[in-house]
Amino acid sequence: MSGLLEQALAGHRPRPDHLDVAGSAAAATAADERAGLLRAVSYGTVRRVVGTELELTGLRLAVGDAVDVVSRDGARVAEVVAVADGACRALVLGGIDGIARGDRVRPRPGPLTSPIGDALLGRIVDALGNPLDGGPPIDAPRDRVDAPALHALERQRIAEPLATGVRLIDTLCTVGRGQRLGLFAGSGVGKSTLLAMMVRGTSASRSVIALVGERGREVREFVEDVLGPEGLARSTVVVATSDEPALLRLRAAVLATRIAEVYADDGHDVLLTVDSITRLATAQREIGLAAGEPPTSRGYPPSVFSLLPKLLERSGPRANGTVTAFYTVLVEGGDHDEPVADAARSILDGHLVLDRALTSQGRFPAIDPLQSLSRLATIVTSEEQQQVAATIRRGLAAAERVRDLVEVGAYVSGTDRIADAALAMEEQLTAFLAQAADEICPPPDAWERLAALANDLEQQAAGDGEVAA
Ligand SMILES: Nc1ncnc2c1ncn2[C@@H]1O[C@H](COP(=O)(O)OP(=O)(O)OP(=O)(O)O)[C@@H](O)[C@H]1O
Ligand SMILES: [Mg+2]
Image 1 (tube, rainbow, N blue to C red):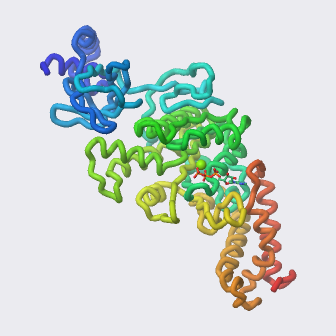
Image 2: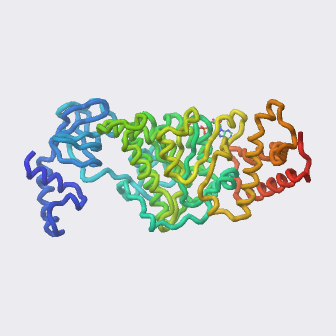
Image 3: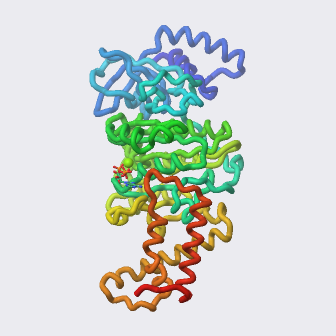
């Protein structure tokens, strides 16, 4: 490549650090000259097509740059994922069929952008911001989707609770506005239903839902049956199904995060849900392996573990509003120690664990209160509320401790008075913990019910009430 062409292409991208001329006037003139030059000669070529990955030559590109690959079927967008000696590797955002060696490659001016703003409310879009709901194009300003996380000192402190409308969460695992939590669960235990309940019941004024790597048919089911029209009206849904390229699956989560940030900067409390972070990690694994990274941690390349904190740190309190986020983590076979779950847990400030054993008893949402924890609950609840929650947790834990003995008939009533009281009140406790998918319970009602239960439990344990054998 000629030195002149290299210079032209380096300056083609709008980022100032790529301009090699100091001073804005000089830079403007140089940029104009380059623009003319680019129109004439700015093509590279496809050197190899392997799997989902292209090797490009003839252009000086940086990681994250977008290019158009012009093949016999028209132009397709690809994004550079690695740069090496004399060539760079890129992944195509659409299908790869029909791309041939020698196809021309045209750089695009700057990274990909998507429409971001209020016009997205009530809409379902793909990872690039194109409507999937049959509605008109999104009429919002276009912006890039990556942004640095806010500096720790620019954030407000988390001080207020965020209602989810789910009794168990609002009382036993109270969530703060701007908190980040994980929803750890296997498949089919009610993650999507729970996320939709929260979207409908939350005190947040807006929700952004990223569906990453879902099966195609589930998306429609989720939006129409689970989320429903009232849930959708205050939400934006960003979808990349499992059959879409890894870059789009990754981008769906990043776009959703950006939309949530912009809503929060407009003064909203936003609820962001990403389902699932595991499928996002799988997408990044594909990208990392295509870029030539080694799979160092149980098949995951290092970039997965730099992506997770980078993305998850972007939710949280902001200057004018908050982004409270729930990320689902798939833990098949109860393996809570697999690397993605482990990484997520270390970044998040709380986790809800959904237990398959509870679903088989018909208890929904199947949240196990004893395994679930909101690390900020003590900051956003009163001392009185904390005492109520602690009493109930103590009762549930005591009942759990003796359950096996009770089942085999080896438990002697009176051995543990708190366990006795909790077992006697099991029906009422379960009625509190369970909640129909279409029921919204405002936190004051939930606390009132829980306080009454805590009171009964204490009285029973003190021997004032009847204790069942
Ligand atoms: N609150 C609830 N009340 C009654 N049934 C529920 C409730 N939540 C979930 N279910 C039942 O559990 C099933 C699975 O729920 P859901 O699709 O939300 O699980 P999931 O964990 O998202 O599944 P997947 O892993 O396939 O995405 C649903 O078909 C529904 O019948
Ligand atoms: Mg689901």
